[in-house]
Image (cartoon, rainbow, N blue to C red; front, side):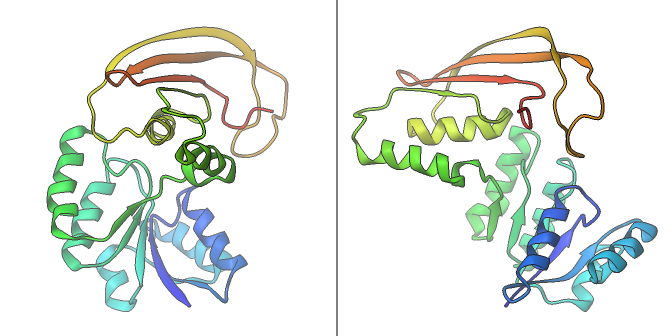
Length: 228
């Protein structure tokens, strides 16, 4: 049985972890969540049958998690990672773990280099279809892969896939990009299928990332995530 706590239990992403624990009670148990809003905390306690606390100090005084899921806003994640790293508590952090290069370097120096156990929940490369593609690349049957076009998810998710397909580590890139706007029919959102037909102005971002002989092409349109 794995016991874990969640910081940011009222967030949309945190609900995924609660559903996992509810679906697999023989494997996972949520031992407390940090929810700053007391009313929201009370609602979550009733819905998910878990304890909530107003801050991390209260949580750690009462619970002993195997690891902590940090599911808060991007600007708040670094502080929690640094605090938990100092305490030696393993962390599963939502993406992105920091919002600037300077903050990422700080996390690397203060956490990674000191042996802190931090896993960033970048999951797209673990999807079965992406694992199949990466396995084919790793097999060598395609030869030396020098180009990859990614149009699966946005921003850092797309770049993560691109880097894995091209075998890119920390190499510099020369980047060119453009944005094209056009009207499209709006698709589903987090709450489900659209309730009415409406037209929105969608942004399509195109970028070329030249890694000195290896080319990554990024192509993503707003509203693409859940589009049929």
